Length: 233
Image (cartoon, rainbow, N blue to C red; front, side):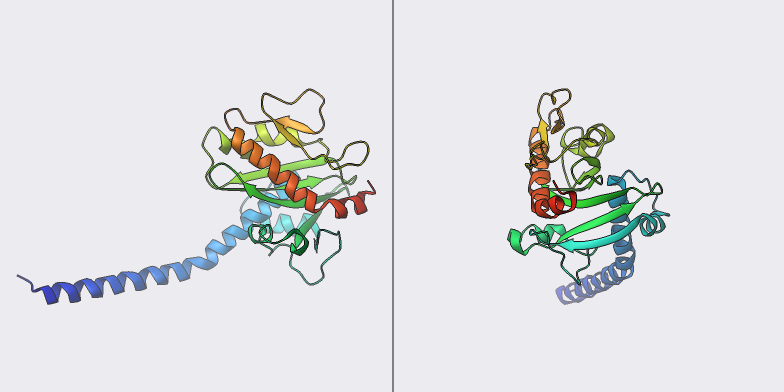
């Protein structure tokens, strides 16, 4: 029968060995995990401009179609020396609006048309939600969107990252005829036919839908001056 001292020493050694092993594995896997996160981000940026990719061709496709990146502030002024891709919107939205650094990605398609892509970050029912929104060259009309979430309810709020919810955003407009920022209303019960400032909410996912509506409005409002300057709205 083993003494208490033996058990304590043995347990301590095992805990140390397991901890060292887990640390080694984590260190070895970290570069791969970071690459996966980077590739997924590229895919999401491109998806908002309706550019399909795979994990294997994401980097090549991103480098082909994303022809310019820049960072601006809420006054529409470019911030030199900042890395648009490396900015974390989860951190930026926690800052006062006048201190936020706001990334912009410019995609140039093979037909020569350019689309400006803006990152989004907000809060759903159970946790963070995020996405990207692209505008056409008029800097008013939405070309495409992509949304995602951390833990929204499957079959309900989690539907924000499905084509059924995302596709209707194409063609909607952020500004009204007088150039006033209107954003997009996510309407419970369905948007009125022909309403260029509204999309259908997710059935049974009201809180997530409204969280997404607020995310789009708050984030795009930060870009208002930049967008107006570019689009001459």
